[in-house]
Image 1: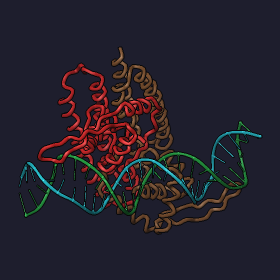
Image 2 (image 1 turned 90 degrees about the vertical axis):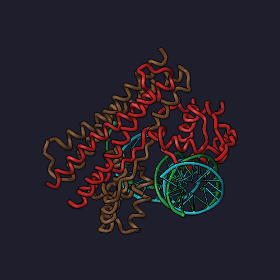
Image 3 (image 1 turned 180 degrees about the vertical axis):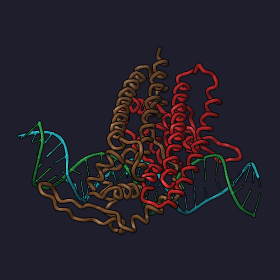
Image 4 (image 1 turned 45 degrees about the vertical axis):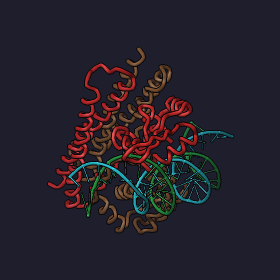
Length: 183
Length: 183
DNA sequence: AAACCCATGTAATAAGTTACATGATTAG
DNA sequence: CTAATCATGTAACTTATTACATGGGTTT
């Protein structure tokens, strides 16, 4: 019961269609909340029925019409209610950590395969960090943040950057540990 | 399709009942994979039917009997298959980040409430870090790790410690940012 | 006496994933 | 001509959460 709220925040930052929302979830919002387009369309339909969002048909030339959603007063009220409720403890799902502990029950060949996999995984996080840093340079070039929305988006982005740096350092630790096991 | 594997790793580290597994998921394993007891019982039943685990009835005095599960060869084979498969990209769900961006659409009173909530949230992470550090001192007192399982458990714990430290530093950044908005 | 721990589950609901479907346009 | 992008969805399935249920034992 929180995809609704992520959608509300995204639509308040800028109205858009289900398709556009799905693309934002792949990029910016997806840093801290993932969702597929199927899920988004389903939830948008419910939110529209509940009067949280309103749709406007936008005819386009050369491409399909789209329905652009905006947040209605009831949706904004629902968001504020949620904002003021306590933060739920996070449900962590870190598959790689399970695999690392599981590597104790595989042989040297399996651990060698895991080393290769961790290296591949590390490369994806290196790319993510580079993407975040490029986004930071593009979207927040000057030190003084102009408005509240931008300042808050920036601090969340800094969180993503800190997370990626931490992961990279930890993966180096993991690789060193895995390599000492089979010397 | 990965709770099975987290359970297999836990049972290989030490056999136990569904209840004991649920407690481990609250503590150690829960650092990187959460699950409730209802989920665990359901999955254990399926795993038993598939021949991945075997149960042994253990009669106890003064408390209910329990069924202690151990990993069968088929379960171990399934785990090794999974270990060697590529790591799936993580599905991140970070509610607090959504709330922080949402704070741009609340008023000063709402942001003050969020500051209080972030402080409370920060305190829980401070506790978690203290717990991890105490566990590290208790379970890994000497620098040289004796066996593979312990070395791997330790590197995963170090990951948890690094994560908590990163979160605490970021929350300080968040608090400073929120406070500058309403000066 | 009340609350909590041990130990196991069922049932109902909500959420999320995967596969499939359509149909036009644009870029290579 | 092929693939990708824009834009929207349905259907089937798997997973996860929440609420409820039982019953004895221990701790405060």
